[in-house]
Image (tube, rainbow, N blue to C red; front, top):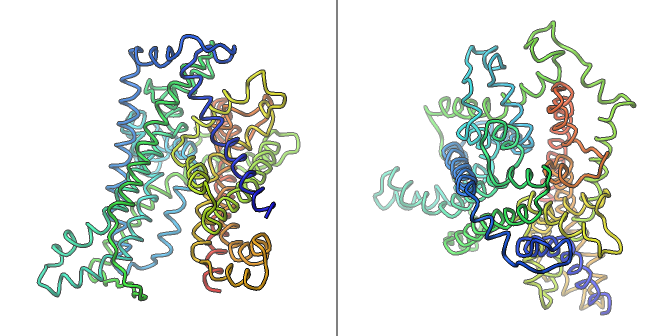
Length: 552
């Protein structure tokens, strides 16, 4: 019993360190400008100053327009494709699903840099097709399109799964009662999928306003400012404005939490039960004469969302010079060979990212599993608090977490601090990615149910023994899949690495970013190719583990 009582204390303490302390220091710094000096005078002055800044309306407007625009464009791409995937017998359906995973696995800042190389004057689009949009990419609309091509899979998978589960079965009932095909679609299929659509759109909105890489690479050089880039600027430019950064962070996290709360409300409040407790066969229709046009549509989107960014990445990585263009005479291996040179900093960056991602995967896997076990299986007092704290980082932008960690651990009163060490990056990555293991493990524990644990207790096993010998082995495949996902995302995290990495330490994302700043585009893209290949490999391994587990 002592062990059981001890575990919730350990879990809550870890969640306080990862989540609560950074957020508390953001609020304190936004309220008290002299917090770093231990003075609590002039309360609310940073927030008052923020709302008096003439640039704030434009910052907020650009951020909201960016989020709304990305959501609208993503919806225009993902909803028709998701409906076709879920309702019809689409040839090579799993192959399209796999291809649409790739844009989400390409880090947004790498996708932005790839599109810059593609669409700039004399870029890859002009070399291949004679088309160059000129400066259109360096606008708010250009940023929207690039981010939408990166984020639309979030909505595509939500819509396709929802319509596959609900669409044709009940639509057929409406057809039997006299409705036409279009009436059944708009009055039955669409309403049943609206919660998933709304949740996906709001999630894309949240991801868009949290993004730093694309606005920094495309927007900032052209005078387009958003909240994330302005927060980073206040921390990077001298004199450092901690109260201003904290106030902007508080504003950004408020918008993000509002969007996430609205998403949760839509999902939980308007879901319609369509199952009867019996297994239902998924009903899909034949595309008939529309088979080839639909295949062409999927191929068209795949070309722009997957093909062009990958072409830019690998084309640049294998080109001796960017100005040389796509030609056999310009092919080279030297950018990749430079990465494995023992004297190059690239090898250290790759080793650092792998080490940090491994530590993050282990920490979040252990903490996520224990949090899910306490909430789902044990249902202890305070389970709601543990559940809320473990999932709260979903709604917190990465740059806000980085600001909170700076404010929290760069204080003189701490006897020991992870600041200026690799530990601060592990804390940042773990806070950002903790919800993944929690969700995976919670779903697995919910499917297991309580009968096995009850049987173990009848035979004299305690809670810890049941956890170790029964529940953990059953949850282990889902946990491994979640940890692989955490590893893949942590290995290429950008904004936290830029703000928190100690002097002299480089990660993969910092290396790529710095190479572009220094003009070594080929070396940066070679490292980006390795990062994407690692992420894709781990994602495929995670899917294989889960599919094998479900078969067994």
